[in-house]
Image (cartoon, rainbow over all chains, first blue to last red):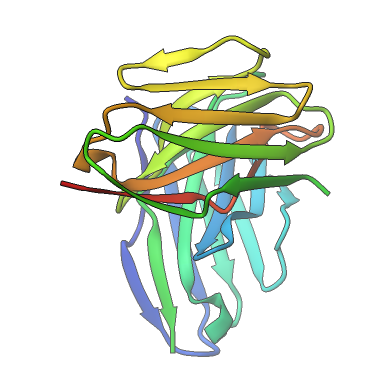
Length: 113
Length: 112
């Protein structure tokens, strides 16, 4: 079974703090993704990575950065957390090639006070 | 800009009812449409559809894609309380690496 794990299920931070969300997958997948999920808006793509050290902006990259130093690990960084970044953050991974679904981690619910 | 719209946004039914969830899309270079079920945890994969008119079925769930009219439906027959969840529709398109565009989700509540 594919396993995607995220470092925390719940996180509370203060405005202005630097926040790291970690995601690890154990199936040697090339592609990894970070989404945020908000009520009524569905999942929105923040960033994704198709290889080590490679990244592309998604639909809402502002206020976020990412790092992929190893194939199995994809980190989402909030340089200076703000209250509007309070959300559920979901990581996903996917093998390369056409016709493959994404596998999701359990999510991190981040609250920024 | 790629767009996926689901309807209804929420639905309340009783056990035994049949429900139909809708998903329409506007995506460049369509590759596939996916349905996920999300309870209070990670979304879990249900179906991937790539060809028009071919129904995919898993137990009481089935789904079909219409690439001409740009929509898909997810049917659940004889609903059970365990079907209560958010159902997510997503479309893979464009030229990126399996990038998905998600709809808003349909919240299904099944009462006993």
